[in-house]
Amino acid sequence: MATYTKLVKPVLEAGRSLDGAVLCKLFKDKTIYLLPSIDLIDEKETTDDDTANEMLDAACSSVTDHGTIVTCEEKSDADILLNDDDLSFASCSIAMIPSGSVEMNQMMSNCNTRPQVSGPQLNEGSSMNLTNTVIIDICEEQTDAFILLNDDDPSVASSSIAMIPASSVVMSNNDADQTSGSQLNEGSSRSLLDNNREWQYAALFESDSENEFQHFSNDIEDIESTSSEERDITGIIDKLAEGIDESRASYFNISRRHMWESARLTMSMKSFCPSKRIDVKFMDDLGASEGAIDSGGPRREFLTLLMENLKQGALFVGPDEAKFLNFTSRSMQNDDFFFAGVAIALSIVHGGPGPQFISPSLFKALTSNPEGTVIAVEEVTDPMLCINLQKLASGDYDAFTNIESIIDMAGTFAVIKDHQTARKVALDTAHWYCLGRNRSAFERFKEGLKTLGVLEAMQENPTSFSTVMCHQPQQFTYCSFSSLMEPELNLPGSSKRNTENLVVSFWRNLLLEIEDDPSELQYSDIFFFTTGLKTLPPLGLRPRPSVHFLHTVEDNNMLSLLPKANTCANSLYLPTVHENYYDFKKNMIYAIQNCQGFGFS
Image 1 (cartoon, rainbow, N blue to C red):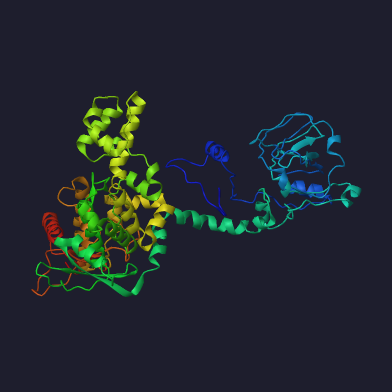
Image 2 (cartoon, rainbow, N blue to C red; image 1 turned 60 degrees about the vertical axis):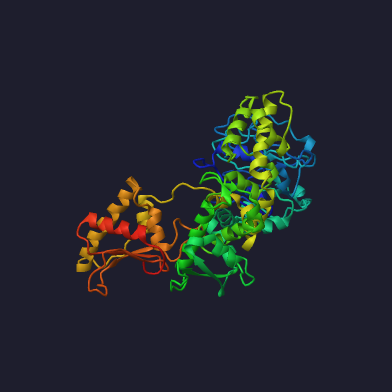
């Protein structure tokens, strides 16, 4: 479909295919362009010198004799019709074309003198094949007319003809005298007989200018990349991340027990620049550095913990999967809502996770118009207010008295005359409570999201960013996680490979058990232990996670009982010392649940 100067593929609902019903619905709204998978025009060697016959061979599937085309331009959008004097059509399938796209060399002297057309008129979507003499009449008085096919010979076999825009068809009359006086319409300079397939395809569409045809093939080449880019969140964020200067760094000194305070302090410093590389050092309780240099792992762990801190903190309120801003005067004084927006933008662009706890209604208000966002009464986070609004919306007018002061404060007071008025008051009050009373916090939060161009990208691609900002179901399953964390094995037949085969069976059984019962350990815990992330980040994970084996003895001349991980390299190292599954499982759970930090854990 045409969108501004580009052609884009229509986005369908899950499970829907581009069938006739969908096409009919789309065609009511705008022009649809179809790119055929094969050539629509068969180039055949002709023995007849008649130009009209060649044109018909190109426009129709198979026409063996000559044809005459008459045009009329009075009517702007008429259908092309097929006419057979014998009324004997084997099958019908024809597509509608605008006659304004036909380039004509010769018209009949008088459109009004042509014989009265008789025979069936074919609707859009019908088709027929012609093997004998066919007359195609196109009226210039109708700039978008249907083509009329008239067969003088009653023997019309089953053949097919494709409807083309009349202004795209080059027509000739087989009468030499008429041909000598031919005239070309303005803006029509391409013939369907052109050997260039792109021009043949372009000629199937109505065009206002030749420039549109010249750029048509380039637009077709850009359809796939443009359409996928608009929907691919990784591609969108990749473009935002191109502005990061890896040669300079913004340094974060973080205490895990005071995550938000540490992060906000750094973001408020004059030396902080969001477009610099993030370099993180975690501090222990005594304030000493943990000693690691950030090469990716500490940064991902910091951004993961920062998003969790925002989710569980006081800046947002509501259920874990759908939170709204929680206005407090102290947070406004500290400008916490602005820094929360900056933190989310940093996490998304610098390879961390998205928040995935923003309410869909809040997300819609951020990406469109907050005044036009409808808030359901069930989304109100105050329990008593939510109950009374639900009662009021359902017709219990006594609930109005219970919350009259809040309704008055919201400015939604109205005399309740009927159920419709009561429901409107309830919805307006819910909107005020969730968005209106928090408007100053909302605007500061939006201002923070503008960091690195994230808010603008969200507004341009709301569907793509909804998976980053709003709650999503658990993305890991046994199949997806085991394929993501694929072990790297030694050569078959080696002693190490024999040991690894046993460990791999323990590893796969552990993953199966997690799927059955995730109470002790979850896939996100293993992923966090390995990469510093609990979900796959929208920017993508580099390098790809890998699983290795601990064959080398440690300083105590013994093999390790516990797994290890290098979060910078996204590598998990499984112990090889265990001979039964239960010892392997116990040590895996112990290490993953009790480990904090990065580097080699």
